[in-house]
Picture 1 (cartoon, protein in one colour):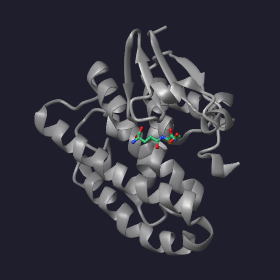
Picture 2: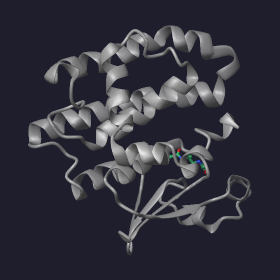
Picture 3: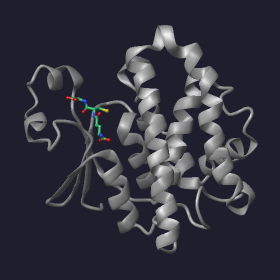
Length: 211
Ligand SMILES: N[C@@H](CCC(=O)N[C@@H](CS)C(=O)NCC(=O)O)C(=O)O
């Protein structure tokens, strides 16, 4: 066991990219769940102690961290998932910020305007995905990772976001051959594939709205 503990609600949400990273790196960790009704009823003391009042929380022994992207970057440093030099890391951070921008749009759709906004969202989605297709095409013609020759923390975040969009519309990647192949390639990495098929992953909906 690594000494790592990840605390989150029983959904994939903002913890899932962290889970993908840890699964793929073969790092065992302790999973702690917070129950949504208790949390929102103010009956879970972890909310009072959370730095920004939110989850996920990540612990490495006595060290505690919040903010999903900070956790990803921390694990990137710990597990050699930050590219091969400062310039690659600059691009990895840039891609991760782009993933965050699209994730915020996705979260807004799911939580505030799913019924009225889904068609419009899907219409605008190709413009967003095209950015990532283009980034991939410039790195070894899209045959490897999003940046450089090694998997990085941003690959796990991008993969999770693409999974979310494939759930939203199974055709969302149809016009993007490089992104489609990228998802297939990452999904078939042995440890990741084992996790993707696991009961633990599949009992967690993407968000509480997905029940
Ligand atoms: N920027 C934060 C956002 C965290 C966040 O929005 N957490 C939500 C669940 S995804 C939460 O804890 N909601 C409960 C609350 O706000 O009390 C991150 O990336 O970790």
